[in-house]
Image (cartoon, rainbow, N blue to C red; front, top):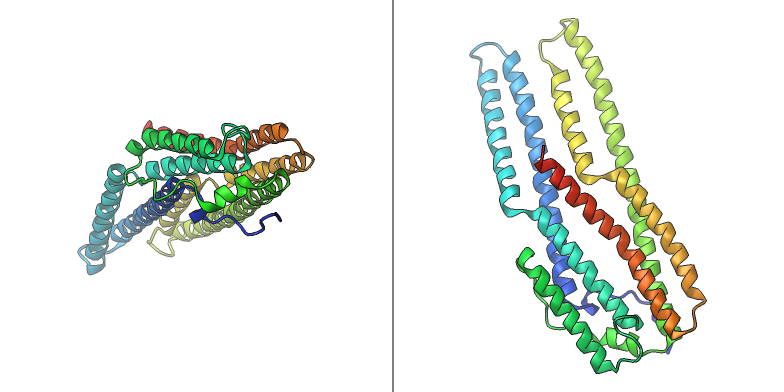
Length: 308
């Protein structure tokens, strides 16, 4: 049987992976959207307050600016309360953890690695996979409302890959799992590096403009404190960088991509079922290591913000 070249679509993985992945992706977008909106409203409120403070007494501009500042603070408070009540950040983390765990189980099953060794009959191997997924669902469903197992946990593609010979399974795993993850980490590392540089340059530009604006204010050329407005924007930009963790993710993803290149090279020479099983277990640990560290960093940051 020739090695499979087409990527394994999400629909060809266990249903619990699809459900958890969708919840995680949706929750991530929601969390980032509300967080970005809250920061933008805070900057708008600060800018409106400064305009009001520098306006002439009882002018329409002062009244309008105060109203805008008030509405901005109220809207920002509503978004903050929504984030605290709905907790999209936690759904994002829990969903990603479940999705990655389900994908790891699926690939161990397809590659014929522990806990699905070659000695297990096909039906027995599927029973073990279903039991593991059932345990995963039972442990996680309370923390992830809306999680479902879908209509199928063992797809035809999964069965086809598991039924193939070692050479085909090896090529499939190295190409569609290890190399695919390596490429993903490389692309994400480059993207985070580029985004981090762009935001840093933006903040530096704001700081330079802020210096110039402050000098203009000191020279009494204008009574509008533009520097204070820029300071609020810089603070919001710094908070956004902390949320996105561009620099940390770029370094971590680059390191993981390099590690996976060595992982792939190690797997090329394996021609024994027992050694192959050990290799897949080790490779899955390498693939999931960065995700585990990412989750720990995210949870740690969340706890730190709560303790401030």
